[in-house]
Amino acid sequence: MALFELREHSKQRGLAGIRYLTAWTASAFYAERGRWFLWAPDIFSLGIAAYFKFPIKPPTIWCIVITAVVLSLHMSARATRSSVSIITGVLLIATLGLTTAKLRTERVAAPVLPVALKKAVVSGRIVALEGRVDRGQRLWLDVGQIEDLPADLTPVRIIVYQRKRVEELSIGDNIRLTADLRPPSRPARPGGFDFARQNYFDRIGAIAFTARPIEMETDAKALPPLSRTERLTLGLAEFRRRIGERIERALPGEVGAIAKALMTGERRGISEKTNEAYRDAGIFHILSISGLHMAIMGGSVFIVIRFVLAGIPAIALRWQIKKWAAAAAAIAAFGYLLISGGANATIRSFFMILIMFLAVLVDRPAWRCATSRSPPLSSGWSSRKASSTLAFNSPSPP
Image 1 (cartoon, rainbow, N blue to C red):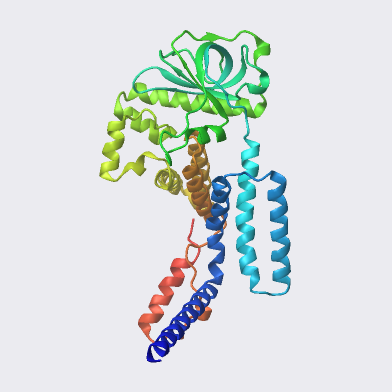
Image 2 (cartoon, helix red, strand yellow; image 1 turned 45 degrees about the vertical axis):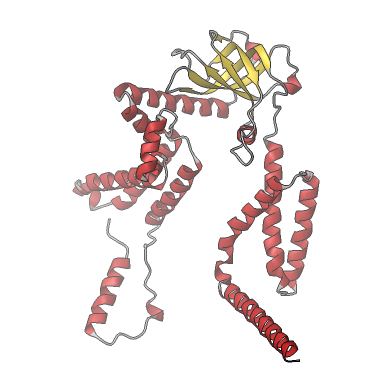
């Protein structure tokens, strides 16, 4: 009997603990309701991850229908002010992530080479070009045609590894070559990096290897004409490549490769030994253009322009040179974004520094002093402190 009572007492204490933990979690969760939106990217990412983890990919219409159903449930729960709206909101964001992953997968779908081909004749347009550290070069081709391969099986884009470097090639050239083609590689081990998936979203359907000469394509019908946007994109890519080449000629070796990475975002010229040295030192992030580099670029232009204009009284006393400097710095940061390749980290950093310069243009202070909510000041020291704070927060002169 005593043992039974002890078990019941332990059970009741356990249930009480669970109820207390549940209530505490709910209270803490509700207290953070003003920050629930910050969890949206994580929940959205869970939906994307769920799509790629599903062994069977749902059809697009199913994803859209599921999202519509969850949206209707969420709207009904919000209309009745039900606590279920929290759960339906989480499900809605997750299903939006799943549907986005499905639509993105369908949008980039392109043929993948089914089997390896030997000595295939390929006609294509160079959309990216880089020299390799060891030897040769690597080309990205938008394929026009592959001889003896049906159009519905022809990859949209391929990567070509050329054993001998050809200096005369430029981005935008139409070329013709003979190469051995194979499908993109699968992971070398379970759970390893899936190059085939990355190539799929880059619309790369085959990898080519060749040591044969590359010829210029003379058949105008082999490749479709370029649109204005494509010409602009290829022109910018060629401009970036030429900047990298000039840096390499001025600074040969590893120094030039690092300078090229910091200027154009192209890190493939850096040897693995140098990469390992940066990793061991804990400063490998310096080689990736992000907030540090964007802040140095934008901040330097801002300071220099404002300093120069401040030395011209006819301008400094009549115009708001701080805004002029902010506008010039924003333009310089955008130019740096273009020549750096536009990686995700660079785009994020650009928008962050752009918001800062826009705040300068609209006279938005960095700090605000909520004087209406402050307690009464009772000492001279507090009054002087408040005065200095208000002076700091007031719009600065030009």
